[in-house]
Image 1: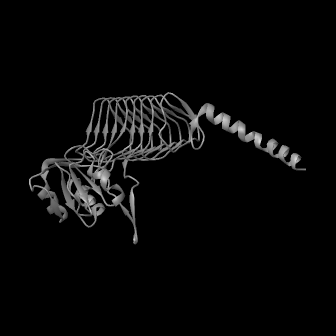
Image 2: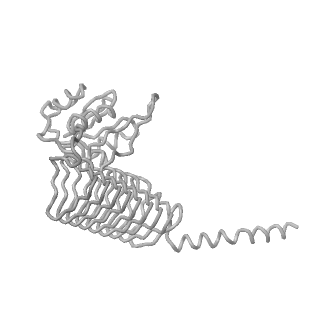
Image 3: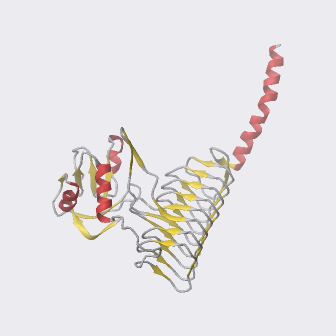
Length: 313
């Protein structure tokens, strides 16, 4: 999320009522999670395990819960609760604005696009040319959709990230202020859910085709010409490169990458980064040939045990 206009370190500190380390006019251009930060961004960190990663990241302002040595060329915001204050900044710079109509007057719809009855289109949504949006689709605020996109009935674009902090009094939600970006020539099946980014974008690349009942988590980046079959669940912060195929009921854990042209068989569980250009299946998913050898070996176990018992007798 970028700030318009640019902010200063002092102005941010005033919004969240905290101390700071650095020049008062130090430029602050936006805020982001650590995996997508750029120079000028704020990143938050509230656990010693991740202090070094945050301080050495591309972010130039670190919202942190301990006074530490400030790296050269950076600034610190010292907060007793960075998670809470990161939420405060999201609410301040991107507040929720309730819609008063089914199709917001601030939305833009391109030429030749067909919007079927009972579609909801939120504030500042942009939809390109020659799209087809079927009934009962919900498109949340700030979503961007390219040209020649089809979205089937009951799908939701822009729902909140599934991101919580476990506090003694219950789960505290990290507020989502990002977007969903759908590129040209994408097809989205019925009853799909695509979460918006926390501060960045969840992006579906050009020409990708998504079957019914697929879930895509926050800040996930899906490349061009991918095929994703029904009931696949993809967690947040995943990178799926171009021309990847995920067959039905594949589950993908957060924060990993699936390389270009990988093929994942149905009901596989992806728990680590996978190299492109190979076929995988199983849980945890592994190379096709390796997995078949493993299964063949497992099938030999009963006969081996029988032989061992005979030798014992």
